[in-house]
Length: 140
Image (cartoon, rainbow, N blue to C red; front, side):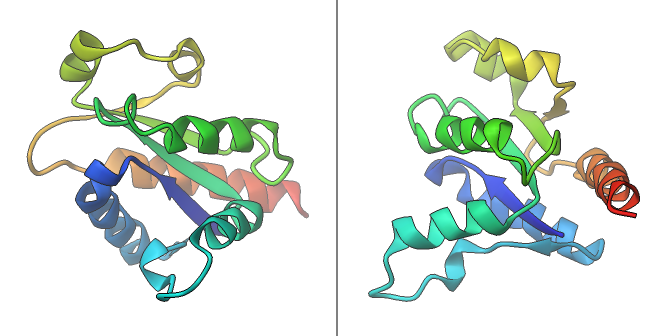
Protein backbone atom coordinates (compact mmCIF):
# COMPACT_ATOMS: atom_id res chain seq x y z
CA UNK A 1 0.00 0.00 0.00
CA UNK A 2 1.44 3.34 -1.04
CA UNK A 3 1.00 6.36 1.22
CA UNK A 4 0.75 9.93 -0.04
CA UNK A 5 1.71 12.67 2.41
CA UNK A 6 -0.01 15.92 1.53
CA UNK A 7 1.67 19.02 2.94
CA UNK A 8 2.41 22.66 2.30
CA UNK A 9 5.84 23.42 0.84
CA UNK A 10 6.79 25.16 4.08
CA UNK A 11 6.20 21.85 5.91
CA UNK A 12 8.49 19.78 3.65
CA UNK A 13 10.97 18.97 6.45
CA UNK A 14 8.15 17.74 8.70
CA UNK A 15 6.72 15.65 5.85
CA UNK A 16 10.14 14.12 5.20
CA UNK A 17 10.57 13.22 8.88
CA UNK A 18 7.11 11.63 8.88
CA UNK A 19 7.92 9.79 5.67
CA UNK A 20 11.04 8.35 7.29
CA UNK A 21 9.05 7.21 10.34
CA UNK A 22 6.46 5.50 8.13
CA UNK A 23 9.14 3.84 5.98
CA UNK A 24 10.93 2.62 9.12
CA UNK A 25 7.60 1.06 10.15
CA UNK A 26 7.54 -0.83 6.82
CA UNK A 27 5.28 1.37 4.69
CA UNK A 28 5.85 2.60 1.15
CA UNK A 29 5.61 6.39 0.93
CA UNK A 30 5.56 8.30 -2.35
CA UNK A 31 8.41 10.80 -2.36
CA UNK A 32 8.25 13.95 -4.51
CA UNK A 33 12.06 14.08 -4.40
CA UNK A 34 11.97 11.32 -7.03
CA UNK A 35 10.64 13.79 -9.62
CA UNK A 36 13.52 14.48 -11.98
CA UNK A 37 14.39 17.83 -13.53
CA UNK A 38 12.38 18.17 -16.71
CA UNK A 39 9.59 15.88 -15.50
CA UNK A 40 6.08 17.29 -15.54
CA UNK A 41 5.61 17.69 -11.79
CA UNK A 42 1.82 18.12 -12.03
CA UNK A 43 1.56 14.87 -13.96
CA UNK A 44 3.82 13.09 -11.45
CA UNK A 45 1.82 14.36 -8.47
CA UNK A 46 -1.42 13.37 -10.19
CA UNK A 47 -0.10 9.88 -10.89
CA UNK A 48 1.00 9.55 -7.26
CA UNK A 49 -2.44 10.62 -6.03
CA UNK A 50 -4.07 8.10 -8.39
CA UNK A 51 -1.81 5.21 -7.36
CA UNK A 52 -1.76 5.81 -3.59
CA UNK A 53 -4.27 4.17 -1.27
CA UNK A 54 -3.81 6.08 1.98
CA UNK A 55 -3.23 9.78 2.61
CA UNK A 56 -1.74 11.55 5.58
CA UNK A 57 -2.64 15.24 5.30
CA UNK A 58 -0.56 17.69 7.31
CA UNK A 59 -2.57 20.78 8.15
CA UNK A 60 -0.53 23.60 9.62
CA UNK A 61 -0.81 27.36 9.52
CA UNK A 62 1.01 27.09 6.17
CA UNK A 63 -1.67 24.84 4.65
CA UNK A 64 -4.14 27.74 4.54
CA UNK A 65 -1.78 29.56 2.17
CA UNK A 66 -0.88 26.48 0.10
CA UNK A 67 -4.09 25.24 -1.55
CA UNK A 68 -2.52 21.93 -2.65
CA UNK A 69 -3.33 20.29 0.70
CA UNK A 70 -7.03 21.13 0.39
CA UNK A 71 -7.11 19.90 -3.21
CA UNK A 72 -5.32 16.67 -2.30
CA UNK A 73 -7.78 15.94 0.50
CA UNK A 74 -10.77 16.76 -1.72
CA UNK A 75 -9.41 14.28 -4.27
CA UNK A 76 -8.89 11.59 -1.62
CA UNK A 77 -12.36 12.03 -0.14
CA UNK A 78 -13.98 11.49 -3.54
CA UNK A 79 -11.63 8.77 -4.82
CA UNK A 80 -12.40 5.10 -4.45
CA UNK A 81 -8.69 4.40 -4.00
CA UNK A 82 -8.65 5.85 -0.51
CA UNK A 83 -11.91 4.32 0.82
CA UNK A 84 -11.91 6.23 4.11
CA UNK A 85 -8.14 6.03 4.51
CA UNK A 86 -7.33 9.70 5.07
CA UNK A 87 -5.48 10.66 8.25
CA UNK A 88 -5.74 14.39 8.97
CA UNK A 89 -2.90 15.70 11.13
CA UNK A 90 -3.31 19.10 12.77
CA UNK A 91 0.16 20.55 13.30
CA UNK A 92 0.63 22.91 16.23
CA UNK A 93 -3.13 23.05 16.63
CA UNK A 94 -3.20 26.10 18.92
CA UNK A 95 -1.23 28.17 16.40
CA UNK A 96 -3.29 26.82 13.54
CA UNK A 97 -6.63 27.70 15.14
CA UNK A 98 -5.44 31.16 16.13
CA UNK A 99 -4.32 31.91 12.57
CA UNK A 100 -7.12 30.38 10.50
CA UNK A 101 -10.16 28.15 10.41
CA UNK A 102 -9.92 24.40 10.63
CA UNK A 103 -12.06 22.77 7.92
CA UNK A 104 -14.99 21.19 9.75
CA UNK A 105 -14.66 17.89 7.93
CA UNK A 106 -11.20 17.37 9.45
CA UNK A 107 -12.51 17.61 12.96
CA UNK A 108 -15.13 14.95 12.15
CA UNK A 109 -12.42 12.59 10.86
CA UNK A 110 -10.71 12.13 14.26
CA UNK A 111 -7.53 14.07 13.50
CA UNK A 112 -4.15 13.41 15.04
CA UNK A 113 -2.71 16.40 16.87
CA UNK A 114 1.01 16.96 16.38
CA UNK A 115 2.99 19.53 18.38
CA UNK A 116 6.51 20.48 19.25
CA UNK A 117 9.87 20.89 17.59
CA UNK A 118 10.56 17.13 17.80
CA UNK A 119 7.16 15.57 17.10
CA UNK A 120 6.29 12.01 18.04
CA UNK A 121 4.90 10.26 14.96
CA UNK A 122 3.86 7.07 16.80
CA UNK A 123 0.14 7.93 16.84
CA UNK A 124 0.20 8.57 13.08
CA UNK A 125 2.10 5.32 12.44
CA UNK A 126 -0.40 3.40 14.59
CA UNK A 127 -3.37 5.00 12.79
CA UNK A 128 -1.84 4.10 9.42
CA UNK A 129 -1.25 0.52 10.62
CA UNK A 130 -4.90 0.24 11.60
CA UNK A 131 -6.16 1.62 8.30
CA UNK A 132 -3.74 -0.50 6.28
CA UNK A 133 -4.92 -3.58 8.19
CA UNK A 134 -8.54 -2.65 7.47
CA UNK A 135 -7.70 -2.33 3.77
CA UNK A 136 -6.00 -5.72 3.56
CA UNK A 137 -8.87 -7.39 5.45
CA UNK A 138 -11.40 -5.81 3.08
CA UNK A 139 -9.58 -7.15 0.02
CA UNK A 140 -9.75 -10.77 1.24
